[in-house]
Each structure stands twice: as C-alpha cells, then as structure tokens.
Length: 59
Image (tube, rainbow, N blue to C red):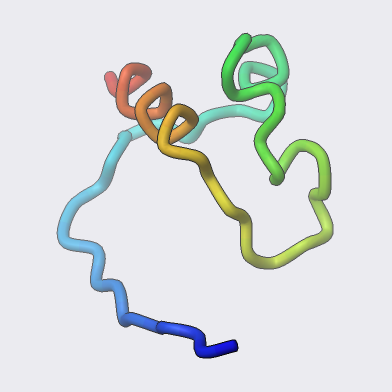
C-alpha cells in the first residue's frame, strides 16, 4: 500500500479557546471523535462531517 504524506504549516489559529473534552462529549456530532474514543492514540482521523462541525463552533 502506498501512503501519501504532506507537510502542514499552520498559518492561523482555528479557535482562540480549545474545544474542551466535556463539551465534545455533549455535542451530537463530535462525541464520536477518535480522540474521545481512543485518547491514547497519536493521530486521529476526522470525518468531513466532524470537521465541518468544528468549523461551526468557531468563536
């Protein structure tokens, strides 16, 4: 299996304040994030729907 990698450079913050775990657990979309289900992992996949929800929560 060939894997494709890319470098990511952050140019701005998505949010000023972090999304808190307790808030994520209450959200109907984000409560199933991999970071909630498998917190000891290092890389987390995020679905398009989950990513859209994160953007909706920007403040």
